[in-house]
Image (cartoon, rainbow, N blue to C red; front, side, top):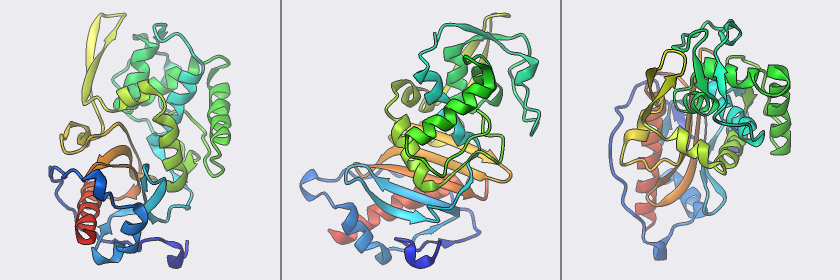
Length: 296
């Protein structure tokens, strides 16, 4: 993408930034600043991100505030699980059905670790919970395997859903996001987040800070944390969240949230550094609040 086509030119810096817990001030509805006004004044405040591709979308004005390499097709890792969840929920399968973890659910591409062992039994609801909240790969695999027609039909349904949503650059090869053939763009992931936010269960599951699920075979509970640490922050009123990581995709994060009472969707891709996606999120928040203050 040429620099001239980028609404806001962002610079890349290799240093890590600490994640802050700053509470944003609420904006008076009478003096609401539009997305266009923010873009027009964007250069007044410096913004440096570590994410190679990014987008911030104002849901009230239905306009992009920030974009960087937003049309570039890249691997999206576990962000794929948002589509996995939509396909499961669209199928209206019984959420209380019990699914047994199989050897076929093991990740044989990247050999990622899992706390779900062969012959453990969980409800479909709980597998969906940890696939979204904890990004559990084996849970996503089991959900796809037990879909009518199996994993092959499930992946077809994922790609059909992408087409139905108008996501022409988005493709899926597996339900967990392990394959580099699971690809999209920052622009289309923003659209995917908008679509996923229509599902109450996706909003609920992706924003829980932690939870436990019961193995019905051993009657033992397993505790899982959310992979996005920002969901625990009062300063981040997050209504939908998903993280992703593979070596090729880097650290990825999508969120639906509010900054200074402004409803936004944030997409961060190929962020290099374990904490860089959180640093970029906080830099975007500070930049947006500071830009609004300058306009006022």
